[in-house]
Every structure is written in C-alpha cells, then in structure tokens.
Amino acid sequence: MRFEQPGWTRSMPTPTILGWATLGPIGRRLPAPGTWGSVAGLVYFYLGFQWMGVIGNLMASAAGAYLAVGICGEAEVRLGRHDPGEVILDEFVAMPLCFLGWQWIVGPVPGWVVMLAGFALFRLYDIWKPWVINSLQGLPGGWGVVFDDTAAALATCASLHLAHAIWAAV
Image (cartoon, rainbow, N blue to C red):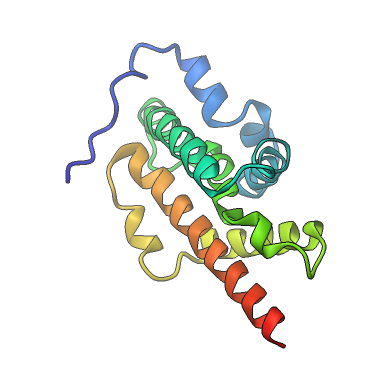
C-alpha cells in the first residue's frame, strides 16, 4: 500500500494550514503542546462523540484523521521539520478513538474517571510509543504524524476495555 501525501492542501494559504495544524494558539504558545492538544481532543470527544455509537465514532474519526493527514503533512512541509511539536491536530482527532465503546466502559465508575484514565493512558502511549506505534511514525508525511497517535488511541481504548473487564470480574 502506498501512503502518498494528499495534494488537496497544497494550494491552501500557510496561515490556514498552520492555524489548523496547531489548533491556533494552543500548539504555538502553550508549553507541552501535545498534552494541550490532547486536552482539546478530550473536550472534542465529550462535546461531539460521547453519544455516538462505535460506528459513528469510527466514521467521524476516519474523516477527521484524513483531514489531519493532509493538514499535518502540509504543515511539516511548510515548517521544514518532521512531526513538529507544535502540530497537535493529530492528538486532537485521535482522542475520540480512546473511548470507542464508551457506553460499555462507563457505569461501574463515573465517566469523568474513565475520561481521566483515557487521557493519561493516551499521553503515556503517545510519549512512550510501545509496540508498533513507534514504527508508524516512519510513514511518509501526515500519515506518520497521524497514525502513531491513532495507534496510541486504540491501545488506550483496548486498555480501558481490559480494565473494565477486570473491574467487572472482581
């Protein structure tokens, strides 16, 4: 499978690309921009995805990931750096995937606890990059920028479901 950078972003103005890629001032002005991008993604999940089923979350997340691939990849080109720290759209669009099957993992513990645990696990997996997550960064352009965060979100989701299963079994 070939992973080519989408071309639809090439004609967009640089301020637009960088504004979206950095979520405006969040990625450019705050310390630990990936953490703040994840916080923004948590709010994004809570406001827009919490009531969605698995299929809705997957479809909306796939659309968001495709947009992020184009924008983050183009931001790399314009900034002249691979996966620049201020580019945080990838964390933002990946966060809802942490909570796939939300309705199955909330209940025995409050939703805010699940969200806090999901946030912490996502940051851990995104920074540590265990298993195949690290190798995904090597994909070209925006694909590598977005897919490692997508994998970290899916690892978070699996961890949350495993923790829920253990909690329910005890």
